[in-house]
Image 1 (cartoon, each protein chain N blue to C red):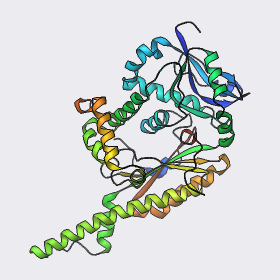
Image 2 (cartoon, helix red, strand yellow):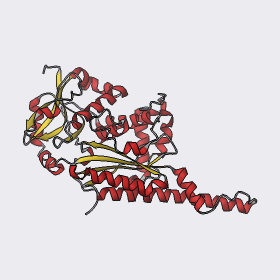
Image 3 (cartoon, rainbow over the protein chains, first blue to last red):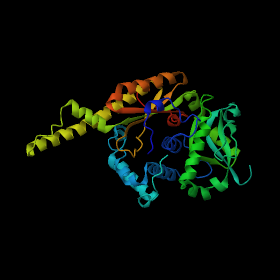
Image 4 (cartoon, each protein chain N blue to C red):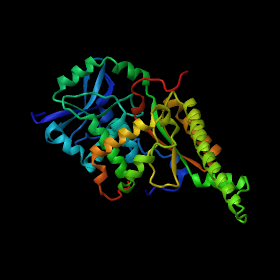
Length: 112
Length: 264
């Protein structure tokens, strides 16, 4: 990831307020995972969206790390652990990863 | 609108909101403009999309194209963000698509919770705060403060002892990360009307662990206070190897369901 090293400068910047595109991971998290769910006339499969979110996050993070991420991304996270049983989440993620075909994905690292 | 068109809905604003709030942004199809469709006490933020792009036959394939999805997701956010500072906006999740304006109006009338949700938000902004931990720095600091690193001792017993101390250090780094995340979230929540702690995003850089991925609903007149709270956290935890990133203001994506994050 080409994350800039200077943090204090970033603190006052507002990437979401219409001054250019916000960081992809932040936008994906909000637009695909949050907001009111409204079922319109055209079926947008929410499971698909969920798969895509995970898939895109993996692409953002680098596909090489996909398997590692599947194991590690919630470990040590006090908030996630509070709500979810580890085994349950792991099982769900594995199932989603299989369905998304991430195991066979060889896309190269695509940093934002 | 032609028979090959549909209507994409981004979210809702209160009825009577002037359409020029969205005059400077284009729709999710860049060739289109934003139109407000009123129904009940609210108005849907909409634009026309082509069924060639958003029809159920093609959408599934489109959704699997990361470039397409990224572009559309950014556009969805840009439209909603245009309302920030102008009026309260209630974000919908990506992909609410209708075959005609009358269907949009019917949805608005059925969804009686939209107007109260807009009143509740009342112009509040969402700010994101991410906290990052330099685990190696924390480990070094803890290690130095205990005078570990006397590498001259040899033999099985010294080795076992060092192993034990290393394990203890790892545990202490974890404990620090957890308590720092909780303390940070608590302080930020106190400066906000509502708060959510989301799962940390994956970091490809192993030296930079995300320990907090919080979203905070902040009244417009408290935004400066909130920013100062983030600066206060930097001052408090900066020397411990923790950095913070503030993002936003965002449309209040994380606060559309009206749940309270913490018991009062």
